[in-house]
Length: 511
Image 1 (cartoon, rainbow, N blue to C red):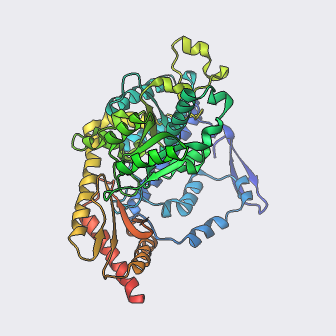
Image 2: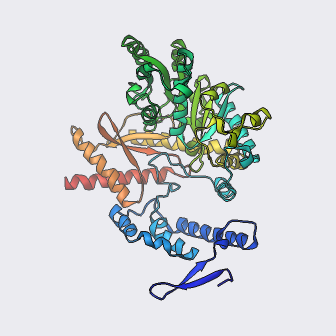
Image 3: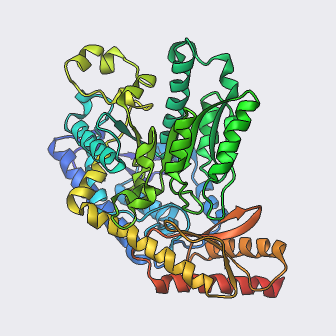
């Protein structure tokens, strides 16, 4: 026990170690640095052992078993102090042993990518130095790193030099910013009011936003939060490839005008969550321009295609958008959270910005000091840009794009493999890396197929050997692979499909 530790007797006369608070403050003092090094080494050791010991993406533990572990922990236990070894060992039981491993080659469920080692190095700097990106005097060099990456992203988007952007927490926040700008841009140009000061005009209940009926749920959620209501969303039916039907879009815009409603924006999706489908962006842009509507592109999923020479043409038309969403924590292989919102004209920032004298006074901006908080709906914000910086500096654009290209190849293999089998139905060809299908070992029993495929998904999760997910298409249950791991092999895919067949056969025998 070192001199900064003391002991006490608990109610059961057990000796309890109580660490002096000074030891746990991260500082330049010798004891703080020593504790930091030892603690990080122990954490890395625990994580490494977790990776080494686990052979499956999940253990299959039931929710009842996991809940029971936490039911044993009482709030008064937080008054006790323990060594780091104790806390890590406790964490092993509560979390590490049963944590879902997104990096596992047979995790092919949601849009959770495996992450890159350079990003974990960056995370060490981010969390340890704890820069906040809202003001220059809290971030200095970090500000310029983020600005450089914003400039890089604007370039690959094909946005004009007068464009701008900001790192965000994720696609939902970025989409909210796009819809906020669309709303206030329309108000500012059509009403004699300033929405920042006076709120929404009476006509706001008539505002309408158009998107495909397989676009992200955040559009409805955000329009509700923005005071326009979920009914402001006009869903447009999709074609056989799950892309927005542009003829139906034109008809819907005209119909809403006839009803006395006010179209203000169109959202094109570049990579729908379920199918990875990409709307016809050039045509949608032309329709938006013709009707004087804001054009936002949600490329949270598909944004990674922009750095692939082989696939970037799929996003042709995104350069015509007024604003765009990109999630680096999907197809750029970054840890959550790492996302961005981008606009083609930095003057649009006026609809967001606010000056607080203690943060970003007007005098500072006049002096040329970068003002990041005016572009963000967050104030305190992590230095998440550093993860992408490490990635690009260590791996480069071509290396980074090769991961997604391999995932797309895996999706194409899966689609071909399933289409050649008689016991599976595949309903689309993957444009990025999502494949939607269902197990159909017999014919004429669609309702049974829903129960069968729903059972397969649950049974596989409860077993833990592989994790897939499911979705609904026209109220029928389908299975889904989201392939993002470049280490997932064709053998892995075939083995996951064998598991689907096994659990499907087990269900059929019992039912």
